[in-house]
Amino acid sequence: MKNLNDLLQLGDPLLYQISEPVLRSESDQVQEWVSDLHNVMEEIRAKYNFGRAIAAPQLGIMKRLIYMNIDKPRVFINPQITSKSDEMFELWDDCMCFPNLLVKVKRHQQITIKYLNEDWETVEWTVQDDLSELLQHEYDHLNGILCTMRAIDNKSFKWRA
Image (spheres, rainbow, N blue to C red):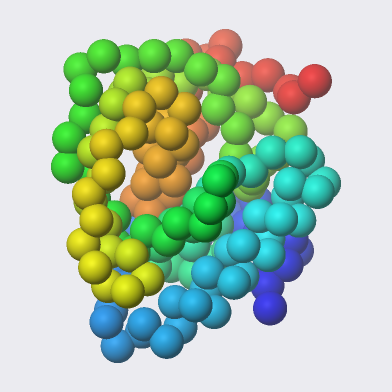
């Protein structure tokens, strides 16, 4: 079982790599990975008071897998963003891999994401505002992109108060 000590920190080369798709033959491992993601997210919540979702690469699991738990657990296997609104908004983004740093970024107001759930059924979900931002952040992790790389400018960083 992975824990908070397994969470990769800013600067770890694995965070900048593109993740591989989850294969159908790995479906037995998905539950174990999800359990690890859930466990680490709960530890982050307890220690830092934030955390709504986590991507597998943050734990060095180089697979296209996202776990979100807001009102209920949701697993995104091999997600793809299929549409993005032209409307953008700015916000201070945070990340479990550097929990005390906030980064001002621009995100799409609305996205549609297509993914496989734990039953390997295709799901399409359109989200906006904070959920849109959250899923764009986690999706970036799958592509080796951190919010530090999306900073609006060189003054878009601040310590969490």
